[in-house]
Image (cartoon, rainbow over all chains, first blue to last red; front, side, top):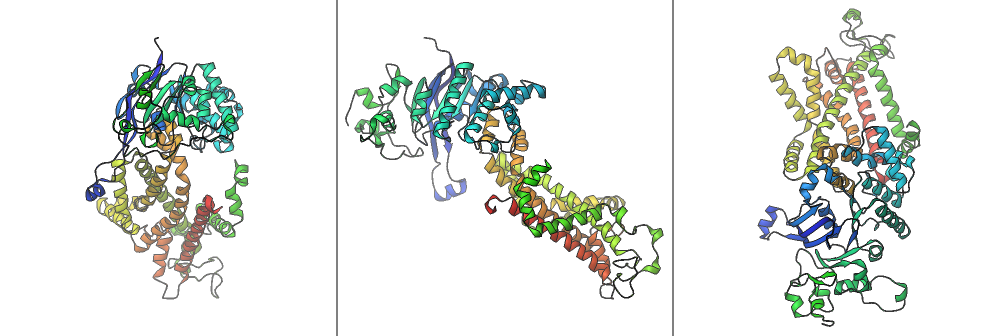
Length: 331
Length: 301
């Protein structure tokens, strides 16, 4: 099946140099320290679909989001947008216009000194999509109406809106350059639960109407279940399991995915004891040898502690786990 | 617009602060009196035809042998002291305001560029700032003024003295703006609205000046007010030391310098009244600046 791939990531890595300044490092005879925020991640996003990436804090989800829109350059591997390397794609205004990003914190992602009208119109002006002020104002009004606000709200400043309304403004802004691909970096995690559902429904509705493609970053599995076609589970800078969302939710194979799904509050689960995910995420500066999940994994054995698992295809799912490969169910 | 200002928190805290209201009233009087001095002053102290040496050293009007026409007395040439003060304040304010404006332009630009670009550019710019901060600012101003005297031809220098002074005071005041703006810029540049602008490919210069600049201007406004007082004082100091404005174009500092020759011979009013005017103006500006700093600080609300 020839898929129409919008965004392709091939063994992408992003390292950050977190060493102390040169002089102090030399005096203390420390080596350079490198944080491997993203370490060899591969995925593809098909046109019109949603790929979600989930994982705990610090697993590199947001770094992937920023790599995907070219805010960071990869330290290794390659990202291709519409078949072009991301840096080349970003150099062309016509391709750059087709991607945009929605951010996590609606209180920080809108410039507090700008009127909403100017915030939403900035991409239109930047890409010179419309020239006359009247046309731009009309378009901004239409965009605000599309996300459930009033056209007259453009005159106000961001602080006059609630969190949910601000996220609607962010979406209107992201849509104003008529993009096809949107990277959403935890767009609902700063919002109340009731408002989250509204924003997610709005995003799904817009996806259907405008044929948008989403790369959706979240730590909330209930949100992800609602949104995704495909799902990737990240742990310590790597994707441990990726495949069709329905398949992963119905039949999680990686022990980490199982633990995450177990941790979702569920009415059926009331009164039953649950397996908590023990321990902390290890430091990505000094990751454990072998499988990065082995210190917390209930199925870990000697092989997991020494040998790094490779990605293998099990049916429609790609997974990196020795236990799943061997069909092991106990340590 | 005006209605919004009258309803704002800042105006509310202004009305509740009698010191700020008093300072503002004094400043408004000083502003009107100096800016419109050619129309408001009793006489024109620079109109040689109207001067009469017979009127020299008239004491202030409230003294036993004071002349009613000269409220604050006259100087050794028979110039009305009140008129001289009004004209002199105008010069002092002009120099102060332009010097601060120059310092803001330079300092804010340096701070924005250093804070946003970071790395090597930041290190270079901030080391320059640190070096200049380690010298007393009046020394820098004296140095710049001295260089200008040495480099410019004499008659050119005389006609440009006002602008040399503005440049010298401005150049001695920019580092504090640069430091403050750099700090705020480093906070702002990691906020998501800056990321959002970068995603759609907005250039660094536009991000600095139209996104970040409006968000770092609050502290700049406060420092600007306080350094206006400092700039006026610096100008007065330089003029008092004799390297500032010539007696043909006297500022408050020049008036004080000329007047102090007669302080011990009994004609105290020639120097005391310009001194009071200077102190009052700078005090009012500083009190207003203090209030502004508190009013714009969200933690003190």
